[in-house]
Image (cartoon, rainbow, N blue to C red; front, top):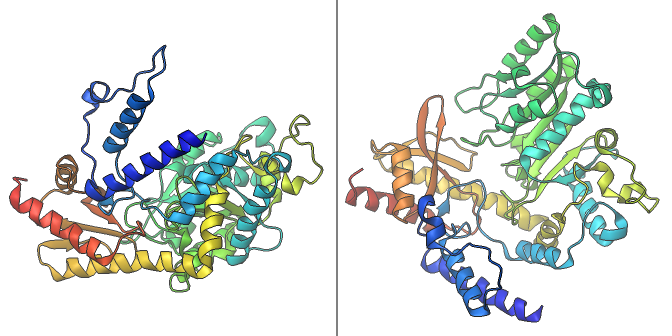
Length: 453
């Protein structure tokens, strides 16, 4: 093991060097992948020198998500203490379904969940779990809602027409999850938004009222804290009033930007969160932990047990079910995703997490200020968002982003809202500094002036 740990250190150092010297990996065309890299699996073992060489070639060609040229997705960067926790979790290799096999790691997960519940104003009855991604957090929320309002669905299936609601700017997982739980994609109502992509509570009220009159059973509303494209925050307080009026479950999908709960400056963006029935957040996004670290909490833990608990004597061999996390989880075997968040949180404290969140908003403001000061840019974003959407001159966003990637300049994506396409730069990478934001625009300008786009 010590030999491989030494090799790991060598590979990690090589990766960090590549991130600095070649921040954008040269892309390999899919048609040439298997002839460019030796990914084959053979009868005989590879010798150590060739093994190391192959690993380095793979590292060199893999996108560098922790580099200062990565603006492409809703994650990025690398925070040391969080990475330390994840590496330690791999070495410990505990599964999180029972206290017997996870020991104090269960206490670490429960401490995180309890603290988040307290922070958002949930009562003592609240609890949660870690899920394999934001889509699955949303799945767990909609499943708990289905089981609350249609208990027979667990044993007999869905036999009546249930309806759920989400904004037209929300994450695609809501429609997908509707099919998973037997309600059906056609029963998802896309609620209108304003020009920022924020759900209109008035349209939500209208749609629910209309469905009730037609004999449907409304049961679930999904609000969003940080829409995928523009980074907008739905008005939770106004939406919660509609949900209370019609007695439906309110979930807040904070996968992207739910971590504003850690910031005194920005937690007002989720004002009313205490009125939700469930809330999800991805720590691997704004808090910068390694992938994946997705959390869902609910106001009453009984819904976790009702939807996800099953007895299994061969597994649950200790009496305290509060510490047998498999009974409130979607999964049985489950890796320890809590430790990396705990090592980060423990090492930097609440103030450190606050600083991480605030820094991303500050970076976004630097980017918006630059765009507003340069007439060749058109801004489509707004304040209080870490998604900075813009166009440069008259260059199509799709064409510009693809060319930057293929020419190994930047990794940045494009988005579309209300039929307007634009470059979507995300400032979620907390290792970025002001100079990196300015350099981002300098690269675009230099590249565009020297390339026929």
